[in-house]
Length: 356
Image (tube, rainbow, N blue to C red; front, top):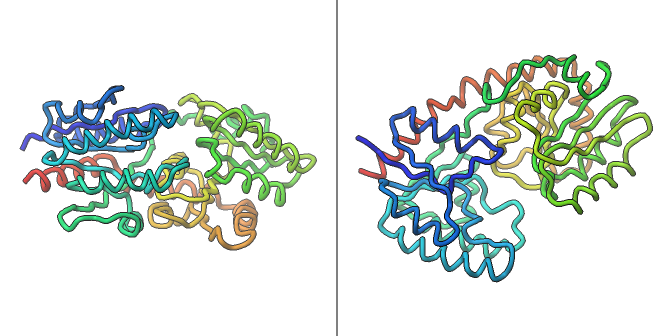
């Protein structure tokens, strides 16, 4: 069976997930049309392509604008597109239950529910994600829910710099303990909690790096001020806002002892998979898909509802002498369980089922 899939809205950006997934589909024999969103009636335009089905990723940009007027206009176009999809095969990957920066949570949930009502199939990345999805939205009896994991990022980025070279780039001594957060600098990421936790367990020479695209100049300045006030004497907290070039990611990960991702809420995390793809252990709350998806050897999970849980977990992890070995085990685990070839095959099988 020849399958022509429209992948929408295609915005590969700084996250290679969409490019990797599209390539995996093509490797499984699916013809993929990468559909970038048009400014006007993007969903309607996508359904007019010569495709057999439409596979959607993050939908928030289709119904949320930068102003009330823009949101009103986008909602109108979004609803028109959903009407076009009444008799058109539709698959949606539920990366999130709701946008992380959701200021109008009830509105966004309503818009996502309308999308769910149109879906022939929904892709989730773990069994935990399926449970949380069913708790959040009404899933029709005829709508299939398929667990297809997020693939790894091994070999996606350059990784030839060793630990001494990476540390030299940061002017960090070999004996120092280095904690890394790499991802979007946004309030839901729990950066203030990480700063405070690091300040309580840091020793002289230790370094915390917070790096990634900023959530706005004002928020980044708040983080800088928090870091300056909390950082103990003899330690350092560096805030590095901005997109990190692909070839420099290896410096950040290979200089780090652990990667800390203290999310306040999370369903899936490409950042956690990226860290383990570089062979680094991850400290994160035991929420959403993380306990099920990440390699146990390299995952230090904690209950965010417990007082000082992040402080205790961060301190205990940094005291371990086997972090390097655990990180390498994690990378091997990801290579074995989250291969993109297998992911493409599973997606094709799902497409075949709904088209039949």
